[in-house]
Image (cartoon, rainbow, N blue to C red; front, side, top):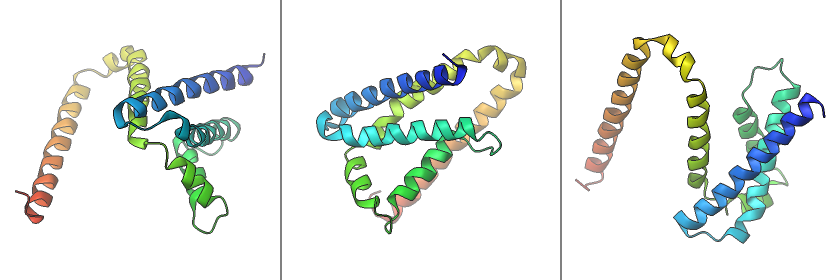
Length: 154
């Protein structure tokens, strides 16, 4: 088995596991039935796989796989495309907020595997992280306060 085919086999396995996790997660968390969501999930996973293949075979273009996936989905869902209606019909059955749990889990595993590299960066990363977390928290709080005040909720 060649290196690329082994890599694509791993991609397929990870995408399949992720798809199952998403379907179960949206069933538990959003009370969304699994069976009607399967065609949309297959489309999403197929787009993700195609994006990974493009990234692998077109390394000269420095474009991340998620950007390729976004571009493919964008093109498929454009109103003038004949694929738009069926694509949106099926993908609307997938609760995309439910995709965050497995994605964040894999991101955490990926970061955890590179903990040694983070240690070499030293204390500066900690300071930057504090500023980023604080800025995100207070920025979100300010925007929320403005919007809730403008709508009269508070």
